[in-house]
Image 1 (cartoon, rainbow, N blue to C red):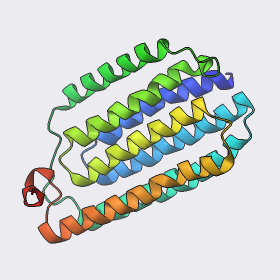
Image 2: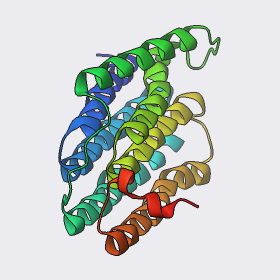
Image 3: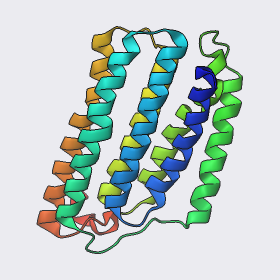
Image 4: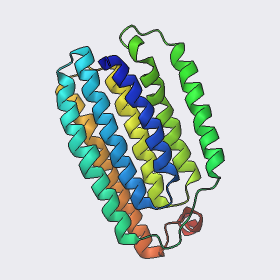
Amino acid sequence: MSSVILVNSLSGLLILTSLLVIEVKQPRWSAIMYGVQSLVLVGILAALAYATDAKELYLWVASAFVTKVVLVPWILYTAFTKVGNPEKPRNLMGTTLSFFLAAVALTVSFVVVNQIQLKAAEPFKPALAVSMAHFFFGELCILTQRNLFKQIIGFCLMENGSHLTLALLAYNAPEIVEIGIATDAVFGVVIMVALGYQIYKRLGTLDTADLSTLKG
């Protein structure tokens, strides 16, 4: 299997892992599935580095492994374990409707990407479409999940999508830029988890429907 085919094939696994991240009932399993998805993303970046002979990407691979496969899932899993799953807030729509909306988002992304004329990204159009679809997957998670911490997972999905988009379109970016991109998720997640944990300590809930006291 060529490295180009490997990049596009592994991108398909990102779709599966995203749906698992959104739909698994326990937030701790969402954190684990996010770690699995990030590992797939690291594999895509490594295959892309080989396919394009972009040595700068190998540093991105290493930093993404440390931050997205190890650190962020560990932070999320630890936070989810501390709060448990007190009120079990679920998503606002059924699994079937979520899958349907995800399929629509993926179809729209493929249509949009097919209109783009970029010579460098031409072999990776399927992967590019999947990366763009992850912005919708993240928004879908944020808008449909009532658990505050699972909404943070939605941000992480969008962030993985932006990683893949940037890697596909700018795989020769300087190493310092790539390291900065790979580490921004850690700071974002730490801040959001800290805020979510303080909300839980004060109000005793992670259900966004019960956070009306924050209004005004």
